[in-house]
Length: 153
Image (cartoon, rainbow, N blue to C red):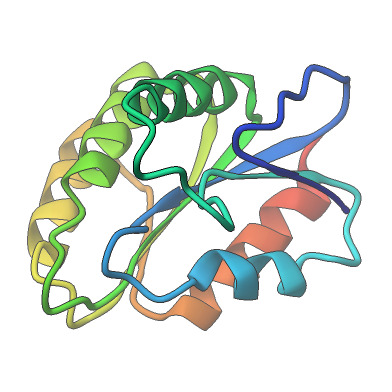
């Protein structure tokens, strides 16, 4: 596995996976996912930075631009919506809507049973991507991601 964390750029060939989903007020599920995929031949794009420069007025726009480029570069996108009492994860919902509408990449989607917008995620995807299963546990979402990576190309 190769690991690319924002704001590092990546343009090399090969299978790429973007870790999309909650960051603010959410557990670091990206770290666990990366560890669970470390034996596979894939490049993982992680938008969660170890140190985000919150005092830099240009940092947010640069982050959004990085995510936009790398979401489009990815062959697979894993969305995870963890149960968070303080975050509905609106940016991740927006990104899921864009990805579902474009159908340009393969999606793996999971939403914790306690995630406040889970019912809406399931209902929206039934229309946008009929047949796409929304996993209810983090473990099932990671396993689906591993399967997608092993069977890609």
